[in-house]
Each structure stands twice: as structure tokens, then as C-alpha cells.
Length: 135
Image (cartoon, rainbow, N blue to C red; front, side, top):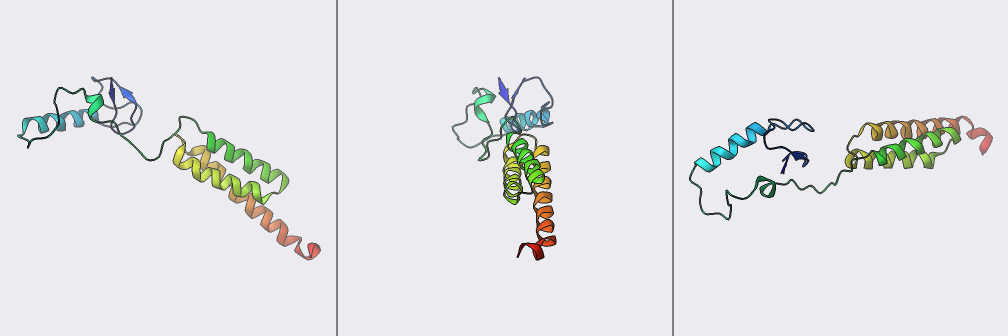
């Protein structure tokens, strides 16, 4: 079993491109073949080692396969818009930012960020409009 060096998902050895991220696997194979043809200084690289053990991408950001943060962000933003709550808008904004970096698809997170900002803006306008009556 091989892994895509770009997204880390399982791929078949005969694939030319990764179906998940579109990474050109043929180019990678060509570069590896050129590397083996040239004389290299001593290293601990063993050409008999399966490809899956040679390169498996590691990332400090572990992405989830779900849109959990984005969906929670949207929920908080909608609640904030319904009850005019700035704390919910702020939570929606923060969770949306986290979701952009952690969720696999950032679309829901961006919607949560936008709705959170709209929530904070609307509540701010509402409070400014009624400020003479509040103080």
C-alpha cells in the first residue's frame, strides 16, 4: 500500500494522479528513477524499502475528515443572530477560524465566520440604535 506524498491518503501504485488531491504521481516516480540512476553518496536509504515507508507526510496540523468546527460555528452564529448575542457571534468566529485550519473542507467554517461577523455587526448596530434608551 502506498501513500500520496501530498495528502497522505492510500493510493494504488499504478495510479498516475492522486484522486483525492490531484498530485502528479508520475512526476514523483520519474524523479525517484532519476535519483536512483545517479551516483549518490552513502546514506541509509535502501532502494528495497517499500515506498509507503519512505515518505509519509507529517503535518503539525491534523485535519479531520469531518466539518465539525465549521458546523458548530454555523450553529452558534444562527443562535447568536436569533437572540442577538455577541458571545455566540464571537464563538462562531473563533470556531470558524479553527475549522478553516482543521476541517477537511473549509467551506462550512467560512460560512460560520461570515455569519459570526454579521451577528456581531447586527448586535452592535442594534445596541448603538438603542443606546439613548439604555443609559
